Length: 159
Ligand SMILES: CC(C)(COP(=O)(O)OP(=O)(O)OC[C@H]1O[C@@H](n2cnc3c(N)ncnc32)[C@H](O)[C@@H]1OP(=O)(O)O)[C@@H](O)C(=O)NCCC(=O)NCCS
Image 1 (cartoon, helix red, strand yellow):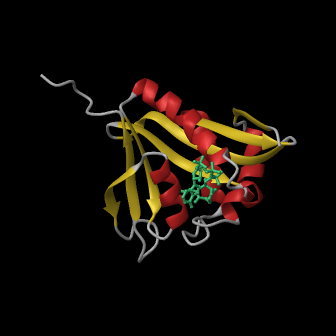
Image 2 (cartoon, rainbow, N blue to C red):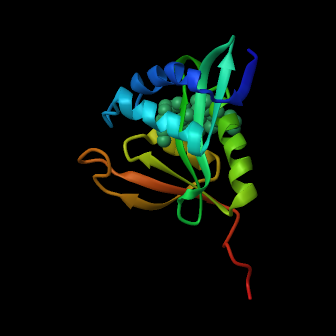
């Protein structure tokens, strides 16, 4: 299966939205169509956004901010792969493309993952992310958002 990776365009938002709305963690987090649309459009406008395409259909996406959206580093805001296309390396490739741009500008890449989203936690750990904090009752009551960080080291060199 040939997967093509390219910049997300405004017209892709309609294809990315159902991937989010029909999947965990966003169902439990009660994301609305409007919130999803706003997040994707903001990524296109103010950050970076990449889609993965198979047969000219969007099957995955990543939205990230190489700098400025999170203290001390870049921030990966949204990552999703259509459920029929998971486990074949698309998520890993999207992360690698985002990290390439983040680590050009910064020593850290941060992301948030829901406390109940064990699958994604294992996925991020396999890519070198470590939990560095936790925001309780962050989006819905009873669940935290774990702050995960992948780092190239401290920002300042040793004296
Ligand atoms: C999390 C998600 C993006 C991963 O994407 P994916 O395309 O299925 O993952 P990949 O096929 O690229 O997996 C990449 C690597 O991670 C590993 N991995 C993936 N899921 C894993 C799991 N549950 N446990 C351990 N390792 C895992 C794979 O073994 C693979 O390693 P390898 O290259 O050494 O074989 C995808 O499952 C998804 O969209 N989930 C629902 C939405 C979601 O949770 N998004 C994140 C919100 S914070």
